[in-house]
Length: 211
Image (cartoon, rainbow, N blue to C red; front, side):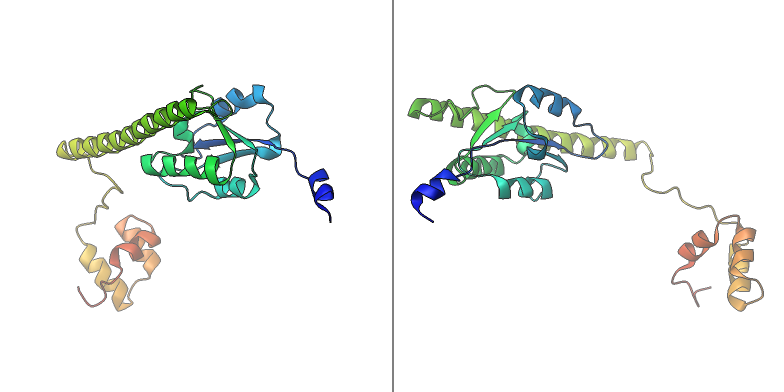
């Protein structure tokens, strides 16, 4: 195939969008609605339900495989791309320099590489990116700190996390010996204790010969 023929069938640049929420319980509609005016083809809209702590995300990786030089990627805000400062900056560099795509961050008009083509605009864009990325990471760290402090305060007040402890009947040891001795079944032992057979087996796992 000649160079002229290859140029004739060369793929036109496409628009993509990346939407991320941290859990399946969170709603991605707000981001999707904000992207609607930009007419992103549905096949090019990638929605991810995963933490932004790193870039090991299946939908994001699928999108990367499709991105080609000249394509344009929309994201609602910089923290939707990720939350780790160093990784956001590195990923931005990878996308814009190595993949040679453009990026538009809807919430921050300055982060629009379709306009940042001269040296000054590129410097301003990189500076804004660095500040916002650092802010996103600090907010994530502060959230984790607040969670840890909240758990510590709750524990200090006597709040117990995890499953509620099972109350054993006063004659549990006798019931256990009868069950292990074969005089009663597991179902009967569980009934006498007032809980399920599964709970009985869970509680006594590894107890054989200890009573």
